[in-house]
Image 1 (spheres, rainbow, N blue to C red):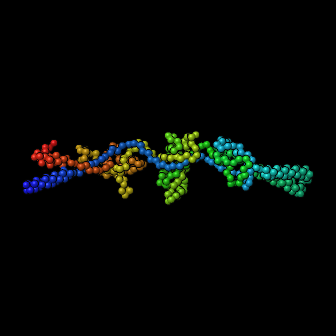
Image 2: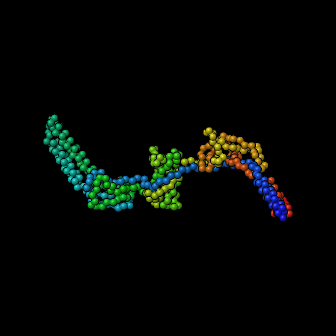
Image 3: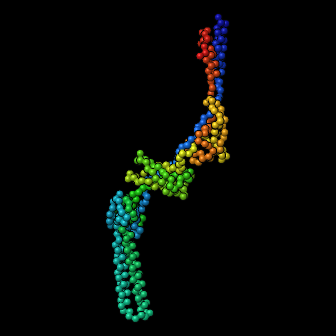
Length: 374
């Protein structure tokens, strides 16, 4: 009995080993070259860079009294925040009592000098040297008086704060009776027209030119898309944490009443755009030693199988605009040519599958049966 069970165990071990060996043989594969190609075709290519920034007024002026010293009082405020004003419109008036007195005194002095000049002209009947000198002195006095009046008038005008251009009042935080220093900002006037100021990294800034078209989107206005053009790029960059950036100014093609200063903006700036040019995928291009090439399938060969080898040649090409997925080719290729994009291996398991299908299973052997191939 023991010998019989021992024999059965040996048979099981032998059958298990045979099955394992057969399964390993079934997993043997054959690598067959697989070529993937694409046809050189014409199309459009567009290359853009992006930057972020804010909406700002085209012009903004902070208003101060250039003549005011410490303790100058505000006598009147004639506008409110967000008021639209015209150029020259009075914003506020400061206490000008002392300056007004100085102007009045200058006018009196001028009037006195003019009277003396008339008297001199009337009494000087002879044309002596002394008479000429007397008239000249009075003429000088009159001229000095006129200069004094003009200077006093200019000083007085500085105490009346006016709008420098048509715009909107903002930042007004004074009232009649407030005391100001010459550093106090009375209010700001901004233009109704807005522009966008963004920041570009040094790589992208080098690609952008004055006049480049830009598309703008705003976080505060979903769905609103504005267009504009680059009107200014900083000559000197700003370094922050070893990163160099450049400011760019974008003028809007069309103003919008919904824009407000300070809104966040993302700008996409077109740096290159071509239409109806030859395009190839970037993965098909190889650059070594400054030479750019592609692999071109020979036109004289005909593919009979998807995995068959075909004659190929390396072709030197000249490129222009390089996009994210495609590149413009200006020489070296002809529309309709097939170029290789990738080479891979395809696994062939047909023989191993036949072997596996024709091999006896362990259960069939144990049952005394045989497996049939399909």
